[in-house]
Image (cartoon, rainbow, N blue to C red; front, side, top):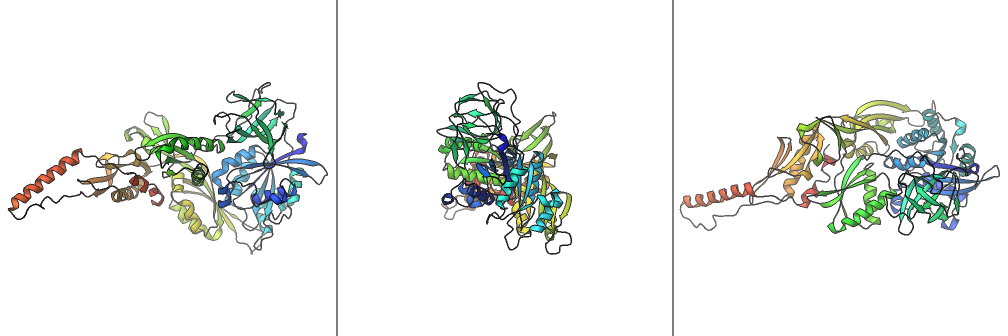
Length: 610
């Protein structure tokens, strides 16, 4: 196929602005899906995606469109997620395209994720086509939203398309605009074969299936391919395109998007970002891959039943193949047994991974409270990364602890500026700037909105920040964040001591100003969950050698005077003294086992600490 007849594009937008519905109309117009098989949000195949109303995985589909110029074009669409936690999916989709549809809701206007995704697309130098969607809604203000697009991004009025994805109005014009405005993919079929793996899944029969964008040359089903990063080679099991289900073909040409079933069984042999080339005539230079994202949020995943450990390992490895932003490493806990320390891009990412493991792999999980990774500068000058408080070096070896800082963009109606500022002030944030997004000049009908920028520690976001933002703005605020870097802060490690012995699994890192409140809440919670012993059990929270909070589990007391029926007081005192001495001796040699219930009761303690 001639690359001049191919167009690769994706759809970017904020959550619930109509990406998946618009993709449905494209499938209908091009006849890719038969009318009797069509259903709403056709490309969102996962139950989780349908229940939550968000796209989690990017989907590729190949469509044939008869354009207004009379020629037939192959359009390769990649539908992208809208939530900030899945921005890695968006960046991989953008790298496989030459153009993007920027979809904005005519009733809601520009949101935080709209701005973030647009700037990302501009970094990849994509041709942007602005689309105002949902123009048929009674509350729609398409002219005001179009004015916002012109003000914020500098689009010309004639560039903006108006569409109702639900009714299908204007959808064909968008496809014609894609053909006219989006450039054809570079590369030619006679060059050495190179293809970029932008996603991959595991199939028990076909091995690892790589979703590829062919950058140069062509590949046939009879060819033998090689992974450039590892040098591993394999016979192609199957070659195909998405139409929208897998449809085998004999050859993939330069510029096309499709899949290659490699037959690899090890999930590490064909990773996202790898370059595939021909084994017979290999290319020398791999394609530019993806910048690996560092995990932002960490949590421990443990099987409720210890016998499920190997099943959890296999499930996580398969899920990691499908979700390249998930990181895993084995760890063990004194209370929860063997499990994995997993890294996620955000809290929603954590929730989605947990639900997928429980549904798709039938696992019963215990998830520890989320935490962040810190950079620790040692007195020796070395810098280490600590994602678990128990791994923090002793205080005398630590010169400085640095915490991850985020750049936040909040877009909300201007009437909520005061409540947002109040919330941000309580979260150790730093104000950067504010910009009012006006609608049409002189238009008094629509309320102006405000874009506020802050920097804030990531640890503050874990403590119920997003729910607070939504409730204070009546659900109208939208949030986007990017990782800025690490910044030194007065952070301390809080140790929890039970009967004067530290319990490493309960240690945590917190800001010095919040340490006393957090330590007090931990010891109070433990006092109600640790069973009483025959001796008094002190529970302490300490920073170094300084105790900041203490609770005591009272001793069980046997009534040693029950057998005394009268008699001299000295006899009773002698029995009590003997009991007291026994308790003192027991306290010095006795050990307190912290039950699993105590650990589980602390999983959400950090969420309400602020």
